[in-house]
Amino acid sequence: MNIRLRRVRESDRPHFKRWLAIRHLAESMWLLRSPDDSLPEATDELAGNITKRFMEESVTSIIVEAESNRQLGYVGFKTQEKPGVREIFFAVGEEDRLGKGIGKKAVQLAIEELLTMEKVKTITAEAFEFSEASIRTLEKCGFEPTGVSPVRTWKNGRQFEIRTFALEVEDQEEN
Image (cartoon, rainbow, N blue to C red; front, side, top):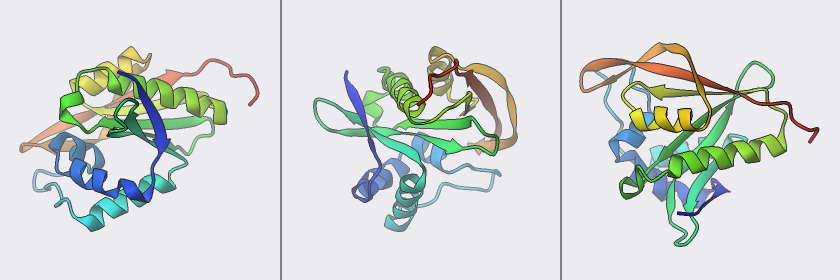
């Protein structure tokens, strides 16, 4: 399956609202910090806030299926305090497309695009310990485990770790 990336725009709000109703995607957008936390209702306001937040990130894209133009998920980068470091985040939101390598392709495309725009030494990532697909995607893209975040998340009344990863980027030509 061929995919392409395009920047998030205001018209993506309905996609984020729909994805907020899918538990694995809502969990990736909304970190649960205690067993009493629950996922928020997928309202237009919340979807609008997420859309706006992703539009304001310097590199956040929608994953689009090339043949059908269907929006499948998102991938982006957070700026870190340390120069030369970015954190990648990604999610495939369409359940019929899970396990088809879309996350891996999207991560690879996003990294390629990022490296044409700025000099980066390290790309970090986090994955919930229960998200085996995300962990496999990161490992297939060359990320190495670096430890565990001090932050925990909750799912079904149980606390889980957030695993951390890093990809050291080879020296880049001047952009």
